Image (cartoon, rainbow, N blue to C red; front, side, top):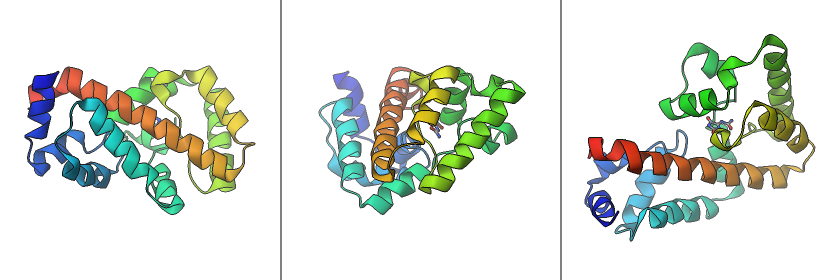
Length: 176
Ligand SMILES: NC(=O)N[C@H]1NC(=O)NC1=O
């Protein structure tokens, strides 16, 4: 682990952003910004730096992060244009295997959510499944906007943590 973090700390920003740039979906600017916070004592410190950066953003910035997320079981999944990370997460949660009733239910709720809040429903797919995602989506639709913004951002952080873990445990040794 120490060796690994030493390697991470030694990366020039180009490599750092190439490797960690999508730990927050389509937000490489966050990774590029926290590179300045090196050295990290461990991967948890990198994760904390990302969290702090997000928390320091104005509410419009937080909503911007949410808006960079693809819908679950949405257009990008069907057209094959999801990021690799999102594709794996959505497949693992069964989003690519919805029957037509489930798919239209999901699409309707996703649309309702976006009309109500102006950003998409975000949930850590790896920590959920088809049933819990649909249930959370219907429940969270009833929340106030500020609460939903905060809950969505907490989910972004969970997604980020699992993506970071995946990179360090599996991909990073090959890439570094
Ligand atoms: N909308 C949304 O939650 N998208 C995502 N969640 C996740 O775990 N991966 C995603 O792409």
